[in-house]
Length: 257
Ligand SMILES: Nc1ncnc2c1ncn2[C@@H]1O[C@H](COP(=O)(O)OP(=O)(O)OP(=O)(O)O)[C@@H](O)[C@H]1O
Image (cartoon, rainbow, N blue to C red; front, side, top):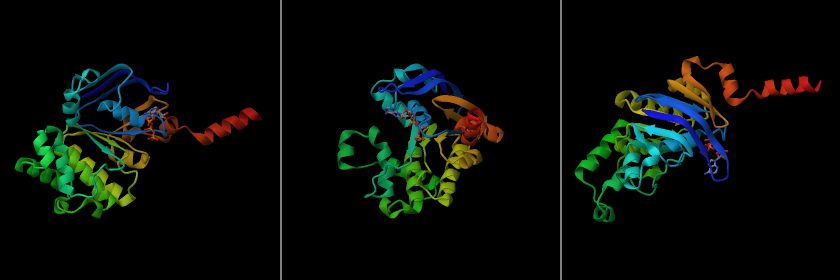
């Protein structure tokens, strides 16, 4: 479970990116985080895996106080919280398999990192992860020969090879076409169902969020303005999250007249 208790995040430049966040996310939930650009979606995700430190309140992940983790503990903790980025973050000039194997590097002794030898078990784990996202046949292909969607699947395989209980995804389909986006979202859905992995993703495409996520968290100016089932999201709720520009303009005109 992920639990935010009165969480605040203020950056060094005094920007209050998150305020008064109280959330409980159970194991196995599929959550879509939506909101305007700059609302605080990435910050929310990045606090969960301690890429950013919270500045007030408490954040617990599987009963661990995230702020209390030090050094090695942070690395061990992050193995349990996979992260996918819009830009895939892959080494494109090497094979798909090597990119997945890199996920085991933190656990390897230094001499094996240097000579790049991975155990048979690691290779099997990596190949299994590629199989789970349907690109086992691409294991020995160089990443730069793959489409954007296939590259995102490699990133997904790399994250699931660590067997995390939580997967965070920061705009995972932002650079993909609609058809490929659907394939990647279906991968998330399958992983969520088959492995009961919690999926929390930031997404600009509201219709995709509503189609795939079970729960929607709407953020506006660093605060949660909606938290509930995707099926309950109405136009009025979307106006609360995104602001209804048309209504605001009408309002201003009325005031002016
Ligand atoms: N490293 C940082 N240092 C200072 N301010 C930051 C930093 N990262 C984000 N911010 C600010 O915090 C606020 C929230 O940003 P965040 O990236 O979380 O929003 P977002 O909803 O993910 O936006 P987008 O959809 O554009 O990615 C913004 O005002 C942003 O400028």
